[in-house]
Image 1 (cartoon, one colour):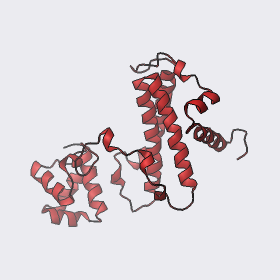
Image 2: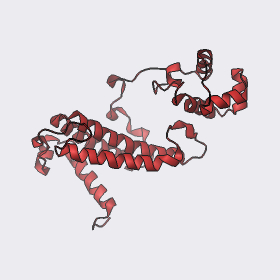
Image 3: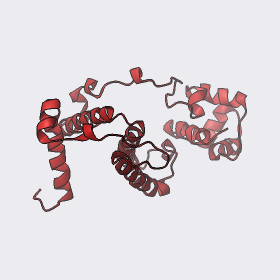
Image 4: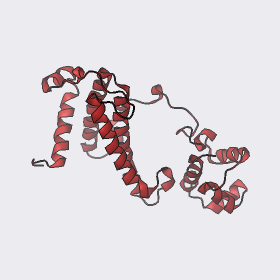
Length: 232
C-alpha cells in the first residue's frame, strides 16, 4: 500500500473513538488483521480499501495519502480562500488575536510581493516552506496539548517532531540566505539581481501604504521578544 494508509485508518478510527475490536467487527475482519493494517505490517486488497473508505465516509485517494481532502478533491489555487475573507469574529475574546493575525498577514503580503519582484522560484519555495513549517510547529504544539487527540494525525512521530522540524528550519534558513545573496545552493537557482530588494522605511510606506505599519509593528514585537537590549 503506502506509508500514509496505516496512519490514516488509525486516525479515522480513533477520531470515532472506536477500539480496534469494534472497528474490526464492523469491517468484518479480525482484530489481529486490522492491527496488521494499522501498523503497516500487511497490505490490504482493493476490496478492503473500498470497504473501509465507505465505512469512514472518505475517498480511497484520501486513504492512500494522494489528497488531504477527505472527499478526494484536489486543492487548486482558486479553492484556497483569501485570509482576509475569514470573519474577525472567528477569533473570540479579546482583540489581541485579531491584531496579531493582521500584523502577520499584512507583513507576509509585503514579503511575497518582494518575492514576485525578484522572480526567483527557488527562493520563493524555500521561504514558503519556512513559513509552513513554522505554522505546522505551532499547530502541532496546540494539537498535542490535549492527550486525547490522536497522534496518528501526523506522519512524523512525536519523538522526532521537534528535532526534525528545528533541523529543517535551520537548513532552509541557510538556503534562503544563500539564494537571496546570489549564491546557488543544492542545485537551486539564486537571485540574479537584488535591486528590487533595495528597501527603506520611506519606500515601504510609499509602496505598501496599507501594510507597512503592520510590518514595522511586527519587527518591533519580534525584537522585543528577543530582548536584545530592549525593554519589553
